[in-house]
Length: 220
Image 1 (cartoon, one colour):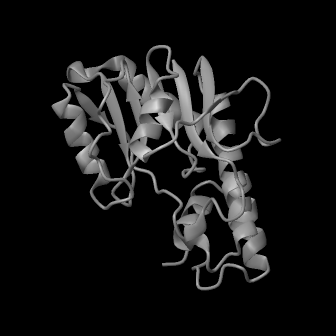
Image 2 (tube, one colour):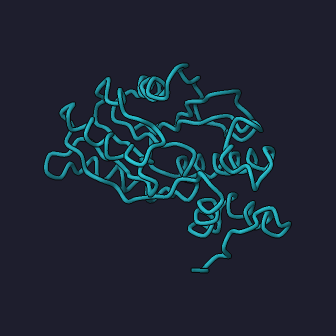
């Protein structure tokens, strides 16, 4: 099983821009790097045979040995997703870098759902709380499944599910996760996984007042 991570190099002004404000671009890039490191660490601890980072940008010291890095395709996000799947050598699980609270156990659970194939399922889709999706596992990739699916919309996940089924996929759903798009999302991800680099960075930003207006852990 291959594990594909679609990612951007954590360069200020190019990543996590929706965290600005309250964060400055350099701080948002630090969040992106922490999230990417946490994601790669979980992927490497899972049972995947290969971990491949499909990267927009230049590799950095955040990438540990043993992880393959390949360049993202250019063009639309659909084209980038399609290009990422061209690197799969067989069954694969694809995630992004927006859910640093993901764990190796959860990634393995998605793979187990795919392997079990209950009710003939050959695809697993992980919905995101914002209406998108955070994970896609397939026994075999069906080209064109991303065409016409709007990204970063409230119905992205629903429309991706429709597109998968229209292509003949039998889909099971994985547990929901919350993407990091805005400051409240960042706080929620840190609370869900307090042992991560992302959580440590959130704590540091809070201590200096760089995350104003975000409820303390456990509030609400």
